[in-house]
Length: 127
Image (tube, rainbow, N blue to C red):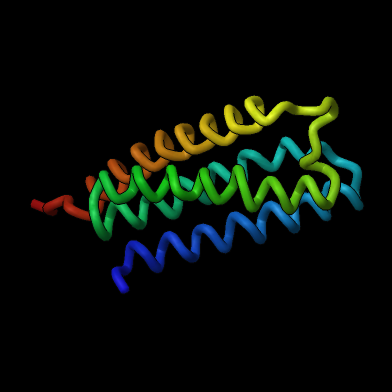
């Protein structure tokens, strides 16, 4: 299995665990669940940085989008079931699909940035 695939799988598992533990903590401690978005972005950047370093910018960008898909489907479903991820107002199927598409695109954008940084640092030639 390619190292970038393993890195993605670690990232996907990390996102799901982070979403679940964050939702539980938010529910128990009473803080806004949405503040944990920053933690998700850090996970995306870290994972896509390593993918960029290992396999290039395109793979890192795809990895970021795939992490966004995992986060906006399985991660959101778990946090929704626990409670803090549940929207205040009912959402239509189109609104849910729109949110998923947005997170996938945003994950791809973070993947692009992480990939460029990883690729640049990974391929830097010290003179």
